[in-house]
Amino acid sequence: MIKQDISTFYTSLQNLQSSQIYLRNCYANLVEIDADAKSYENSGTFMYYLEQGQLFFREGEKGDVRLKPLLYFYGMCHTLKTCLLTNRPNYPESTSILAHGVSARKRKKKDYTFTHDEVKIQQNGLFSYACSHLFSLKTPPFTKVKMDFLLYLIPEMNDFFALNNKEKSISIGRIDSTILRFPASILDNYHVTERAFIQRISPYLPTIKKSEIVSQQIVVLLEKPIQQLRGPFKCHLNKQEIYFPTDRTYFVSIPEILVHYLLLYNLSMISRYETEYWGELFATKYDLDYSIIVHYLTVVVDKIEALLGEWLQRKG
Image (cartoon, rainbow, N blue to C red; front, side, top):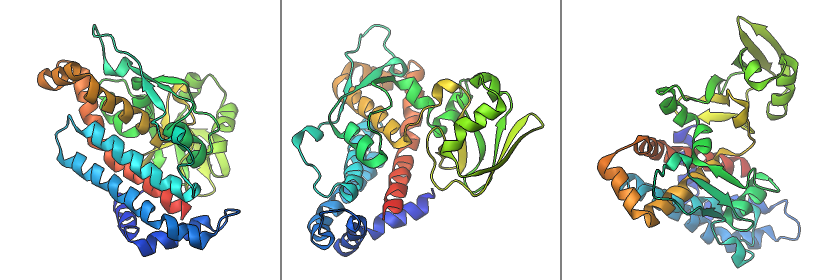
């Protein structure tokens, strides 16, 4: 997951010829689809979704921080639709999937904090549709979830939370390495033996050649580096390191891109409809919400583009 390579890949798709060739490859194995005809038909839409997503991201980077959530969220939605066109040649099949697929709860003005806020997953809409058709999740991983839970799943936020001794994940090795190192104390946090722990993580990893406890570390030797991070394993983009939750509460199998979808959805709704809270937050900087949100908005665009670009690269 290298930012420069992803940027070059996006640029290479921003012409009709390349978009059509890319889609033809994606459609080649789909039954009852004329790959040549459908790739020709969809190439313009594919390219424009991608361009529109990039435009929202670039404008968001240049704009006032208070507007970033809205621009980033719609940049993400357009890029997600780019991905969906590779799997679903007739997208959108119905109007029911055009909704965002998430709802925010009504907020009480007194003692409200963003980190304790939550969103609910709807049965229909883009979120559930992406779960199913991009990540083969028949049902979303939860029906409702709090913002702090989502933030703890993001490696780039771990650096921030570590300053307050609230980090929930640790680096266990580099992306290009075949060796993973977990602190042996993690067995106590997960309430399992070493054998049970290895059994729990093995479905998300390449073949494990060997595991042993050495100097208070569980050392896991893989047959090859991890090509695609899944389940609880996440990548820190700048450090190019793999992060793993230290607390079993956060051992959840959710693609990180869906985490960002939920966070940006809620932030975009707050920025639009909770004007008093949003205005006071940035005017007074009165609590930790401000620093958390600003830090998140600093790292999120590069991560979204890397995650979705990597998905498109694997697909093509």
